[in-house]
Image (cartoon, rainbow over all chains, first blue to last red):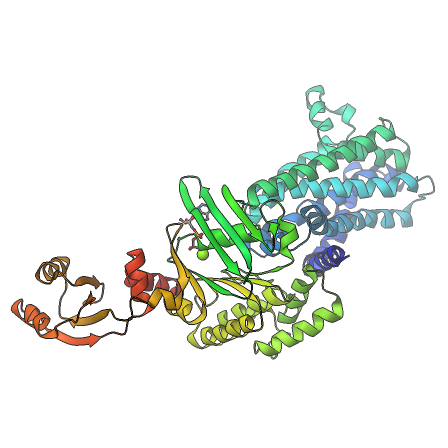
Length: 245
Length: 323
Ligand SMILES: Nc1ncnc2c1ncn2[C@@H]1O[C@H](COP(=O)(O)OP(=O)(O)O)[C@@H](O)[C@H]1O
Ligand SMILES: [Mg+2]
């Protein structure tokens, strides 16, 4: 019970201090809009193609709404030494890091539904399988957040965390089958695609929205979950190893 | 009194640097125990190991019977920790900071609010309660950081250089608050490089130098044997090492040393005949501006035990004040 009081207050403090700040919120709204617009202009296609680009826009929204947030909630607080307070509190490291990442997961998930909301006004989303869409968006948010966490605990400066997350997420836009199917990539690039969690998430997104996935959904979910567990475990191990001297 | 902190043969290295070397001590329940030593002596590293922020290479730590290195989380709810830097959240107000810290220790909202108000009042920060921490003065930051450390009424309070780098008035106020806390029953482990602070506050003091404890005792015991020691300070026009050496050969029963400011300190277990010393200086054309008989202080004991000149400690103090 006591640990949950700590959990809740860490989460709400981060929400108030970082996530619910106007620049962050407007970024969360503007970014998906800009991506959607850019793709319409590029492809020159009409409104009927909304469902084919929606998965990509959702994936990008989650990716950008999560990965770099940990640069602030973790790297920045580590540098300012207030993170020591959290490490010294009688709360397990697992629960502490869940509290520090829950904000980004919620924020990323919410971001993903901004383009869905917009799309619902311009096209018919009747064929969407919500039963798999909602869990996969959440799981993509978890894996991207934990990727951000992995980066955030591996560096000591905020700008390094931001640079590294860009180093991952820009290639991921093209490697993970968000807009260009993995099958259309050069064969030597494909192994890289399958080493990235978002590839599995993007496949479920496509299947949930337009029924065009390539891999079995169960396999995708399993792979995505495995990445989440692995990234979280490695991040925790790194905190224990490098931050507790 | 039963010991609440028991530390045995504690060691810790950072690469080549041996920060703490085989430190052994215990702290009784209700005691105000002091770690006194210069910068880099290993005080912070010791606190970090006791509180679970650093892992010892060797040795054991038990706090209230809990094996800390093995199970740090179990002991942390007993501890209040005030780091050497004021590391609260700059974007939160004083009140929000205290309430948040209470929540970290599982305090319920009504309990936190009441306790935060009480502490703000006690530390004279009620006026600043709703202002952001970022805008606080150094002294106010320090006070709030200490208040945050005791929000959950811990049994043991760790204070790492609590008064370092703040103005004299705030430091004095903090020392009073620390003494009050201790009188109310909190066990306190305090580190400092201010000799007077240790002397004034602590019931027992460990002298720590280069990672090792040189001596541990009560202030009275440390001072005993010094009470009848004769100490004289001479302010003179010029001093160098040869002068000290010459003085030593001329008066073999005296301990002579000098600190950076043209001062010669002479210690002896016998009466110091001032006339002879004055003549010694006159023969060498050195003017004496002032000669003073000094009541032995803990500083003299510290110098004697550690071989560290008090001047070196003062330099450290100046530096950290400037920071
Ligand atoms: N994280 C670290 N990495 C390397 N050396 C360190 C680290 N922390 C402390 N040290 C070294 O250990 C010694 C003791 O430091 P510290 O415990 O901070 O001393 P104090 O608190 O008494 O000033 C110093 O020589 C310091 O440089
Ligand atoms: Mg220190």
